[in-house]
Figure 1 (cartoon, rainbow, N blue to C red):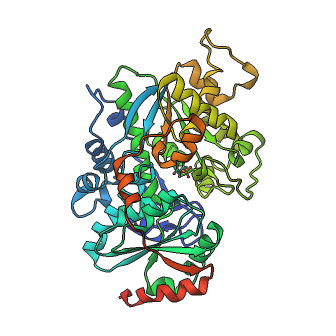
Figure 2 (cartoon, rainbow, N blue to C red; figure 1 turned 180 degrees about the vertical axis):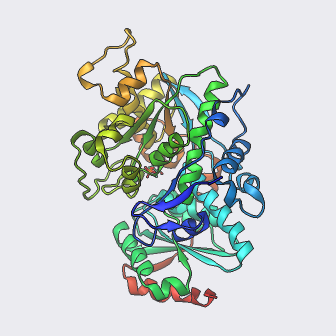
Figure 3 (tube, rainbow, N blue to C red; figure 1 turned 60 degrees about the vertical axis):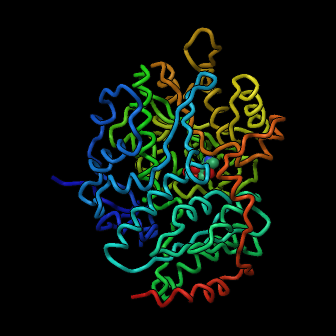
Length: 462
Ligand SMILES: *Cc1c(COP(=O)(O)O)cnc(C)c1O
């Protein structure tokens, strides 16, 4: 029996998932893809009398898809360690909210970071050696990565963030971990942080001797676990009597989350399609409309984790549809949502349904609401001129719409308060970080300064 293969979007092969996870990007500059996936359709559509336990369900999927690369303790051990938290589903305004913010840093990125950390830890235990995870953050990624790798004995984590440009809470999440996690406060913008990290990886001698690895959103090790919660949603809905294949509405920036959904569909998950919801950074909606891909500088919005003008997963997503915009459009509809609509949606869901959502989730709900207007349901006005393929197919089968709730509203309390007039509840795990004293290393926006600082790890090289 032949298992899946790992091949870059530009052709390079990886021997196994560990190589792909440790490298992050492929040596040819492309993004690793998992190809020839065995089908998991039978696992997903089996009768469950209640929503399956997430970590047990995940183990079964991972055993099927990645069985030949099981880490020393098996996928069960990885899933138990990585997922002490789980997704939840709740209803709001005719949609299902798939809440993905019950992890340690209250955003969906905890799933990917936690899984990648568990796999790398287990693999490094087996082979010996250490790694330095080097990453730049504009806010959410750094916290999720820092928290996931915190306390691991064979990994050091170095996170660069732009001084004064992330929220107090985000800064506390990075700077209060300590131990093997160092936060570097760069006197510059996020672009400077990214450039410094890129330069460090490009310095081959440094990169090799310090054993640098990235854990950013192009890492296949973060996408695979994100496919798991899409798959889990199908039996979870079926257990409550909802059998029609769902439409997934995904608030998107770098398009990693959406790509993980498409990967789940490739593995046999029943779905009626995807709806990509963006803020004013609408490169992908434009591509689906015009067939032209025009990356450009990002625009700042209140859903700032989606302020991306050059989505890093676009190449991977495009590859899944052989670079054909029309074919992508058959599976993925896209909507761009402006700031005023985002605020209005937060207000409307709070007042109408008593549900407080973060601005990113609000972008998703606004997009889903717009599409349910195209529904054939006679109670709702429909506008056939606006129908597009994925959405009309979705609505004609009365698909339930599942909107991914990507972060807890308490993470964006200022924005939520301003839009809804009420402060969101702040989970205790976020409040704890706020009370601690943070610590960081200040650094000019200079690649040479970072290289000098990283050389302290260079003796780990054997
Ligand atoms: C990262 C992030 C997104 C965007 O996810 P992508 O995978 O980059 O498309 C959306 N919402 C929140 C809260 C995020 O942190």
